[in-house]
Amino acid sequence: MDKFNLRQSIFISQAVLYGSFLLCVLIAPASLAANNGLSYFGVHPLTAIPFGAGLIISAYLIFSALGRWQANLHKPVRRALQVVALLMIGVVLTPYSISSWFDYLHTAIGTCLFVIQLIVAFWIIKKGGWHWRDVLLLAIQVAGGVIALIYLKLDQGFLLQGQVIFQLAFSGILLNNLEVLKTERPS
Image 1 (cartoon, rainbow, N blue to C red):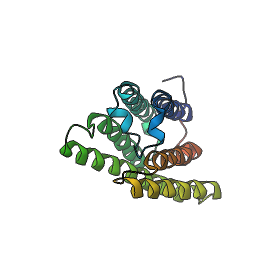
Image 2: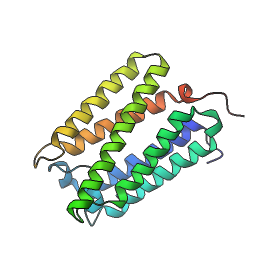
Image 3: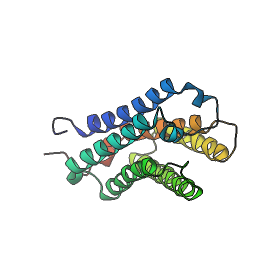
């Protein structure tokens, strides 16, 4: 990771994450037609390993990037992104199909993940001066979150699609604004 700058490191973490999602969709395309969220891939026998590996590797890459660049990042957002990475691992470790308690815990972890990502996105945009592109991405992120929330407990709908929209918008905000997160130039 030392040879990559912060933008490259975060981009690679997101590429791993979305690559694992795409692989899971290719393995289990029926997931797009049902109201399954991304976590369905963590309980489906054919996709559990690529899904789990994608989230864990992405979380590791985020931790690595934040560790390498910690002196150059605003502490609150650095801590929030560390929590995001931990919650990504929490999603993997709480497959909702094990029991109702695991389902509840998994849903709580996922909800915390989304809320923290929304707060971080808002903070980044505020710090960056409300650029129209980022405000548009925030609106898209909120729309994806609302879609996911509506379909969270329904049998039919667009939970996965809402989650993907939310996550892509968050990634866009994050990657577009890494300079805003820095407190000083790297040495």
